[in-house]
Amino acid sequence: MLAATLLLGLRNRPAHSLLICTFNRGTQGLSRHAARTCAVSARAPLSTSCTRRQSEASKIESKTLDVLGTAYATDDWTNTPPAILAKTGRNLLHQPSHPLAILKELIFKEFPTFAHYDSLSPVVSTHQNFDSLGFAQDHPGRSKTDTYYVNQNTLLRTHTSAHQLQLLAAISQGEHNVLMQAKNNFAAPRNERFLVAADVYRRDEIDASHYPVFHQMEGVCTFSREEVRDKIRQATTAERDSRTGDACHSDQVAQMVDATVVGEDNPMQSAHSAEEVAFLVKNMKQAMNDMVVQILTKAVAAQQSSGEVSASGSQTQFPVRWIDAYFPFTSPSWEMEVLFQGEWLEICGCGVMKQEILNQAGMPDRIGWAFGFGLERLAMLLFGVHDIRLFWSSDSRFVGQFSPGRINSFRPFSRHPSCAKDVSFWLPAESTFHENDIMDLVRETAGDLVEGVKLIDSFTHPKTGKGSRCYRINYCSMDRNVTNEEINVVQELVRKRMVEQLGVTLR
Ligand code: DAH
Image 1 (tube, rainbow, N blue to C red):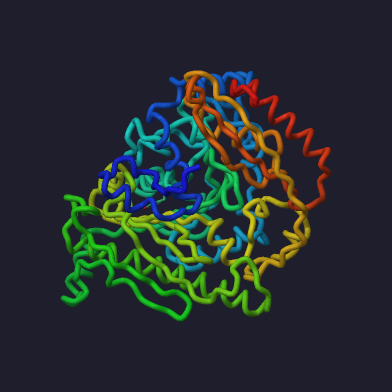
Image 2: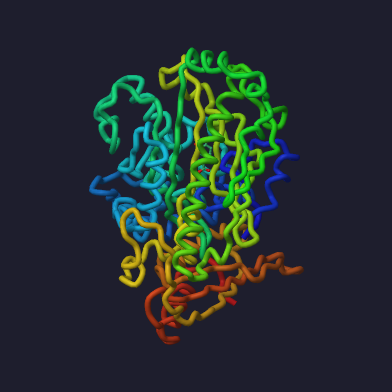
């Protein structure tokens, strides 16, 4: 488990800037899965013995895979297990009392002039998820170890950015069947600004803040070049300063810090003028700062009115910082981070949209910015929810605490005892073992009984050269007491499946 945080696109960054990004533990939703893939060969999917063994063992025998009522042909790439498929129909964002849905509505309200989408299918093409956004062919995010494939050309979206080109093209070509899926202003003549809230899927590690399904909010805002020219003309010289830190401001609850500059390390695109970039960046950062201040202010108010010390502790001030980033589909690019309980949490990525995307969509006369927020981290902060699994709970002690439009602090119900079990094994010879295979296997076997899986020991035998690993699996139910006997049965099954599916030798 690497503590490093790299963004989806960081593989293409110059080595020196990679270092900058290794100090924090980023938010799920934006970057983690790409980080770990750095340890494997970029073209890992089909060529390694470990991956092959895993996919053979867990291969879905059926020739088709049913996702949300549609049958898709399976192939060597199919790696989406039943427990993940079952999540595709849960629609947490459509349950008005669910904390994630409440947060979604809160953000939608902050952007009333944008079209709001929250019903786009999670099944997308590899073209939508990667190619349309300029991901390199060997980008590690495409790997089977990181992504749930339905088949070679179809996958469960790994991020909401997968819909950028599709929606822009639909706007530009007036495709009403697509545009009508917007909840609010689909009837507006043309709206080149939109938000997409959706569930996204990534093979990931297991702990209190990572879950293989989570939610993101994508924002896309475009302007005609003419409109931007007029606005620039009206602006004062001071406002034209290309120092992007101008957009930062402080508030009682959030203290924004932005020392970033557009330059060699975070360059503008040749298709844009410096004035256009300065305008877009300022506009984007202002919108995002305002939104984050709104959310943090509500989080503090909820905490104060509950009189409880919740997961957000007694924190009433939140330093927020902007840092340089890299994404294949924006330049310049940034991340926004919030200091929460002593840890910098990455809550979103954003930047000036690559002009190729707008050109491809049939909008060469427009320029724009985009962002992607991870909703779980913000919701944990907003509602004081301490364990990401709770968002999937149907326990009335959880769901009964929330109501539409209301931000309140979650009152944790008593924690059930947890139980740790270790499993040690030798890796198969010439293996390119990937720990996400273990994560999926444990999740498939134990479901939400598993609270965390952690590598606790790793070594190579000096004589045989064999690799050894020891993982600690923490079992803890969110809603009931579990007996040791019950856990032993699950653990035995995990061990058996590890031998069968991953080819390891238990120690
Ligand atoms: N899709 C990115 C991710 O999941 C987040 C992101 C970054 C979205 C920059 C954007 C953006 O729209 O401009 O890691």
